[in-house]
Amino acid sequence: MKNLLRVEELCREPILDHISFTMDSGEMAAIMGPSGSGKSTLLYQVAGMDQPTGGKVYLGGKEITGLSEDERAAIRLQQIGFVFQQMNMMGNLNILDNILLPALEENRVSHSRSKKELQKEAEELMQKLSVAELGERSITQVSGGQLQRACICRSMINRPEILFADEPTGALNKSAAAEVMDAFVKLNHEGTTILMVTHDSKVASRCSRILYLLDGRICGELLLQKPGTGTQKQREETVNEWLGKMGW
Ligand SMILES: Nc1ncnc2c1ncn2[C@@H]1O[C@H](COP(=O)(O)OP(=O)(O)OP(=O)(O)O)[C@@H](O)[C@H]1O
Ligand SMILES: [Mg+2]
Image (cartoon, rainbow, N blue to C red; front, top):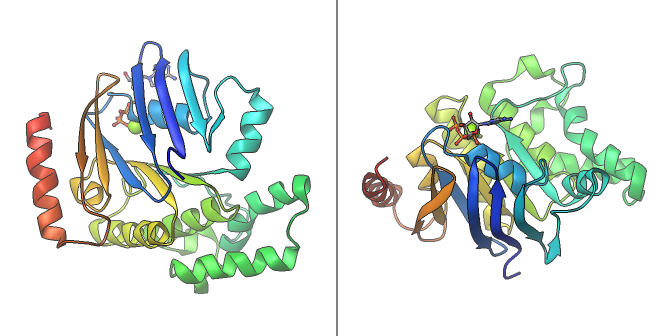
C-alpha cells in the first residue's frame, strides 16, 4: 500500500518540530541522529504510545492521532508491533508464553484464532527467527540475541501492519546484532514494513532508507537499494559517507 504510514507536521513540544514523512508497505527504514534529537519521542508518537501536541499520523489511511487512549491501545495491539532495546519480557513466563501473550490478549476481544492456531503460528515465527528450540526456556536461559529475536516473534504474533523498533540491537554484541538484523531483513523480504531507530551505521545500512533527525527535525534522507542487494561493504561505505556529510 502506498503511504501505509503518513506523518503530517507532527509536533511534540518542545522536542519534535513539524515532522512529515510517509512510508509505503514493504519499506524498511532507519532513523538516525544524535542522542537527544528526538528519535524515541518520534517513534512513540507514530506508534500511538503518546499523544502529539500537533500534526497527524495516519496508519493504513486511518488517522490514529486524536483517538482515545482505549482506541489507540486497540490499534497498538492489533495493527502495530513494537520492539524495545530493553526487551521487557515477563520473567514469570517462559519464552513461548511471552510470545503468545499479546495474541491471547487480542483473542479475548476478537476470538479470531483458536489456542491451537496461535500455538502453531508462534512456532512458525520461532522457526523463522531461529528460536524454535527455546519455547520452554525461561528468559534468563537464553542469550541476548535469542531473547531479542523472541521479542520480535512476540511483536509479530498479531500480524501487525507495521513494526517499530527502538535501538533493537543497542544492548547486543556485534554477532547478536547481525543475527537480529538478519531476522528483520527476513521479515521485510516477506513484506513486513519496518521503521527502526539505531545508532549503528552497520544496522542502518541494511535498511532501504535512512532519515536523519537533528533537534526534532528531519534534516536529511538517504535512499539505499532494497535490503539484501549490493554488497554489505558498499552499503556501509555509502551510509558512512552520507553520515559524515550530516555531521554524525
Ligand atoms: N518524558 C519526557 N519529558 C520531558 N522531556 C523528555 C521526555 N522524554 C525525553 N525527553 C527529552 O526529549 C529530548 C529527546 O529525547 P529522545 O529520548 O526522544 O531522544 P533520542 O534521540 O531517542 O535520544 P537517544 O539517542 O539518547 O535515545 C531529550 O532532550 C530528552 O531529554
Ligand atoms: Mg532514544
